Image (cartoon, rainbow, N blue to C red):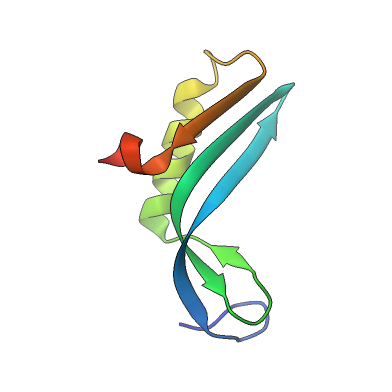
Length: 76
């Protein structure tokens, strides 16, 4: 596959996804990703993006300030 930003080659790697909403931060470690070797742009398959959204939505009402989730443990 090619990077949609620079057309460089993509490589499968595990990355860390982070998002912020209101005053809370959610960090998801070990996310299967496609990373451009040339520019470093990170992208996710549709399946992984959907799972990330589900994980974030599942903790929205329970976190106080910061939550760290291990993707591998939650998906397995």
